[in-house]
Image 1 (cartoon, rainbow, N blue to C red):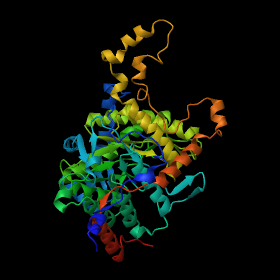
Image 2 (spheres, rainbow, N blue to C red):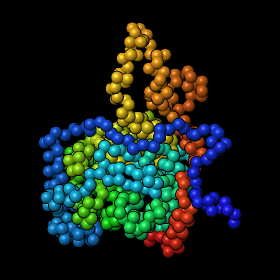
Image 3 (cartoon, one colour):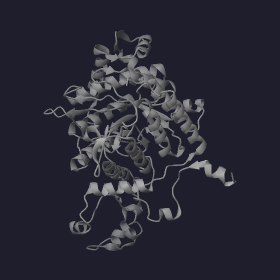
Image 4 (spheres, helix red, strand yellow):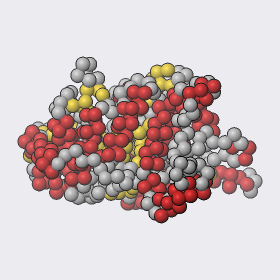
Length: 519
């Protein structure tokens, strides 16, 4: 072995150099940044409305109760003085508010790359890739069940785009890998193809413990260092109406005990799993979320949590979920107002019901994203790639959504609202005078390259110029970009010793059988 070998083995991955970059990057994108929402939140509720929804949530908790299908959770709540009858728990509102008051209003998650650390809460707003669809769709292959290679493609997109901050759940479920070991293969790829904050599904003790250990290894951390601060998170959903199931509670409690964040997101569809009225649906959602948060704060006071909203409506003609609707927007805004009332960070989603990346897909997603902005949301799930109400992940939609997310980030840029003497441009106005134009004046010439948002996907040419270049529609342009990204992608750096340790852990856990299943 020559002297160059150790240094050659020290790192794995990294950007290509020299002639490999000669063709240029797939797109010119905005740099990595943590968006700060500079707007005042939209508050559709007056003080009486906030009080009414809070009172409604507390009455649900104290009079109707929530089912907890987990004996450990029931034991904790019984010890806390809650009224437990069978699996139904009724809460004293004062206890709930005392527990919620222990949760931090803000916290920071630091992944294996500390430069990707994310503040959650306050005015910060971060975006998560599409998570959990069982199917994929693209212009070449159409709709098909998820597989491991498509999962890897989406992980590359997740890492590539600077406007995506979190590598959340599986962007598509790789059903070609057995469920007992799927989490091991997926997390290995997630932790080596990306260096962003990662997520664990709360779907059984073995999966949760394996993911925590893999995140610890990938970060080069001791067990004490992992437990000392947030390094990853889980998201749990209630089984609306009025129920929390065993594996979600088990995973949430495991993470909370180790100081890792838990996002509690009830899935309430008005007219099906919740009252048909938005205030009723929001009150139910809050009751379910606060019940789980109270449990976690009793077990681990001060553990980082966030409350999520996934309140929308159904199509009353077919029963199908609808997203990006006026009702969805209002429910998100109302939940944001209530999250601030409780002093909790909030999660929302960038969702739609469209089946392909068309106009409907983008107006519904835009409605969802902008309602998240208006509500003061801190974490936006499914921000890129979601179709068919969460049953499809699409790379073209992923690229299209990232164009939207970049525009939101630019919208937050303080430069757009700056009012210094130079920004007012009075000298330029005097220079141009009546009837002139500003194209050639010094004020414009000094700023024209950075004055406005520059799209990587939108085509701003007139019809004739667009047609002369082949008349390529948006989804087709997005498809070409997606292909170029995959062609140029290089994984982020990882110490080879850490990568080897991660691979050894996966191999050992596979040999042990992974997570038990009944098939």
